[in-house]
Image 1 (cartoon, rainbow, N blue to C red):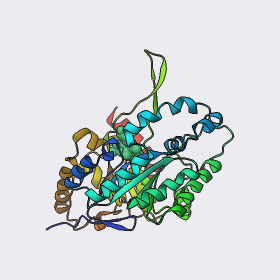
Image 2 (cartoon, rainbow, N blue to C red; image 1 turned 45 degrees about the vertical axis):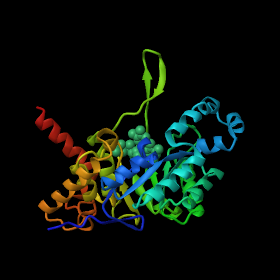
Image 3 (cartoon, rainbow, N blue to C red; image 1 turned 90 degrees about the vertical axis):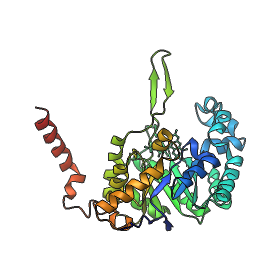
Length: 334
Ligand SMILES: Cc1cc2nc3c(=O)[nH]c(=O)nc-3n(C[C@H](O)[C@H](O)[C@H](O)COP(=O)(O)O)c2cc1C
């Protein structure tokens, strides 16, 4: 039996659910070609950052007055261009990637405020991007900003971006919303076509030798899959949005679990950085094998079959799971 790996995501048909998510690697067309050869159905370039766009437009001085710490942060921008080449070259990379690849190419914007910078969304579309990922990376610290304020800032950003483009828009959200299902519905109303669950925030660390706070990036582990797994399982069927799963996808079992919970697409980042651009071909072969062995003829049949709404034990996505896990832990660790 041959299995049908096709999936629908953001209104388009993808040949399989695996997408190479944004990392420094996806900013290089030769690497994108290797990923295409390894079978991924689409690729997403690394994000272009709101701050880079502001900086590029020579607003640095004005922003430095407005935002404490910005002047210091501005010193990162020359280095940032090693990461994603900066706004102008970014658009060129989109064009080059489109010319070199047959699979869909997504572009990515990373920001948190609505504003003029979002016109880059349209430029990315004009450069040929097939869809846009909007990574809403917000770490709210103001005592006076309520959850409603932060949510409305996010929704305004999404509707601004959506107004600027006609290609599909996927919003990469954080898991830190008080009412994620309700927020997802609002994101759809604001114009999102899909959600990517979740943004994996880079957490700061403290360097005890130098007594400094420093950023630190560590690649993920499979155990981190549980967070998107739970929420994709809960969201599936409750909101009419495409669902992309990211965070902790390393093995075929991880891919299968996200699909069972309800993902329409599965994003790979750390696993490709760890194992190289050829890794997706192994995952795809394992996925087909697993489906054959378990009598699934198509991804569409698999998708969401163990979502909360389709589950015989829906409570396991909620508090009951917590109590059961505690009981299991105490009985096995007596
Ligand atoms: C080094 C590195 C750079 C990343 N850069 C971006 C980025 O530019 N934009 C973005 O949306 N996500 C970025 N991510 C996040 C990944 O796309 C992905 O969502 C996250 O790492 C979780 O997936 P994983 O467990 O497969 O790594 C980056 C991750 C890593 C490790």
